[in-house]
Image (cartoon, rainbow, N blue to C red):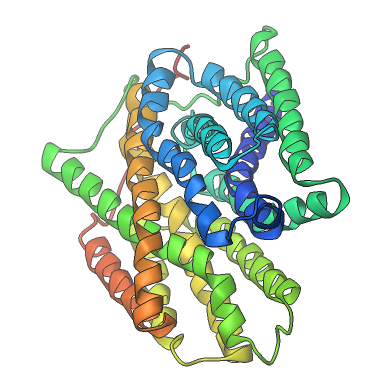
Length: 401
C-alpha cells in the first residue's frame, strides 16, 4: 500500500512538472530574454512553437510505446528526459538554439498524458477522485510556472530557471526508476469482475458515439482552456483597473483564480465517483454557458467573481473527459486512446492562439467570451447525447508488463 501511494505521488509530481516545464520559456522571454537578445516579446514567442507542436504530435508514439513496452518505463524516461532537456536549454545562445531545445523538451513532455493518466487509473474501480487530485497538481504547475521562474530570474538568472528544475526532475526520475525496478513494483488494487476476466457493456454503435462525444467536447474544451488560461492575465489587465494597479498584482490575481479553479477537479472527481458522469458533465457545461455569457462588459470585483466561476467550470471539465476515456478503454490499448485524446486537446490549444489574437484585435475580449458561450452550448448539446449510465471496463487483475 505504501509503495502504491508513493507511486501516485511520483505521478502527481510528474503532472506538475510537465505543465511547469512547458511554461518556463514564456516567463523567461517576457522578463529577460527580450532585453538580453535585443528582440521584442512578439519576436521571441514564435520560438516556443516547436515545443508545443512536439507536445501534441509525439503523444501518439509515446502512447504506442507505453502499450507495447512499459508504461512505468516510459514514465522514468519522461522524468529523466525532460529534466535533462531543460538543463541543456540553459546553454542556448540564440533563438534558433532555444527553439531546438524547446522542441526536444516538448518530445519528452508529450509522454506524460498518454502514459501517466492510464497509470493513475490502472486497477481502480472509482477513478474520479484520483484523476481530480492528479489534475490539481497539473494545474498548480500551470499556476506556479510564472511565480517560480520569476523568482529564479530575480535571484539567480534565467539559465538557472531551466537548470534547477531540470536537475530536480532527473533526480525524481532516478528515484522513480529505483521504485519500479527494486523488486517491489506498486501493484494496483485488484478488481474482481463478475464472471472473471474482462467485461464490456458496450455495443459498437454506443462505443463509437461515446468516443465521438469525448473527442468533440475535448476539442471545444481545449479551446475554452487555452482561451481562458492564455488570455486571463490580459483580460484582468484591461478589466481590473480598480483592483490590479501593477503587473505583479495582475499576475497574483490570475494565479489565485487558476488555483481556485483547480479545486473544481477535486469536487468533480468526487461527484464522478458517486453520480452519473452524464449528469455531472451537464452541470459543468451549464455553468460554462452561464458565466461565459455574463463576462462581457464586467469590470473589477464583478469580473473577478465571474472569472473564478468560469475557471471552476473549465478546469472541472478536464477530469470528466479523462474518466470517460478510462471507463470505455481496455488496459492494453488505453495509452493509445489517451494519446489520441490529447492530440486533439493540444491541436486545439495550438489553433486557439491565432484565433484569440484575431478576436481581440478585431472585436475585443467581449467577442471572445461570446464565442466561448457558443462553444459551451455545443458541449452541452453533445453531452445530452451521452448514455445515462457509462459502466467501466474492468480487468480482473492488473495488466502485466
